[in-house]
Image 1 (cartoon, rainbow, N blue to C red):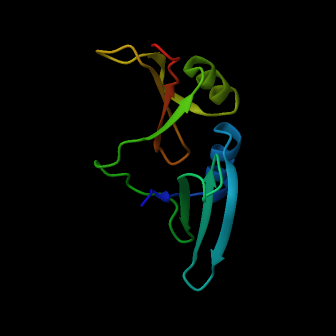
Image 2 (cartoon, helix red, strand yellow):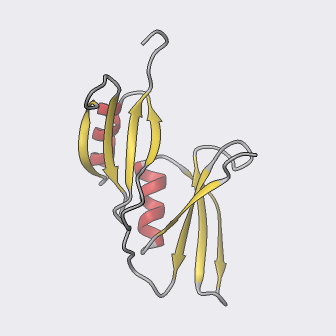
Length: 131
């Protein structure tokens, strides 16, 4: 067994696709319209679906926003340099909600940004061997 994807409901598919592909550097892997159901599915990721987990962005045509609820946490993405990832995200219009730095009670360097719908994305800086 393996994780295939995580589904997020998004209010504006084009804004979300721009964020995930331009700000986070993912690729649009596939997109399909379902006119009878009035929704669109778009799958984005860093690698093909056969090789890793991806995000499914679900856009219900008649819904422009969602209550994220209290149960959602975040999506974690490993980066080489969390400080640089934040700077790049800001330059591309991303909203940094926690600047890069060591996590509380630890040494791992993390940062948080938000996508256009308010979903949290955590950057976790890759540790070098021996760290």
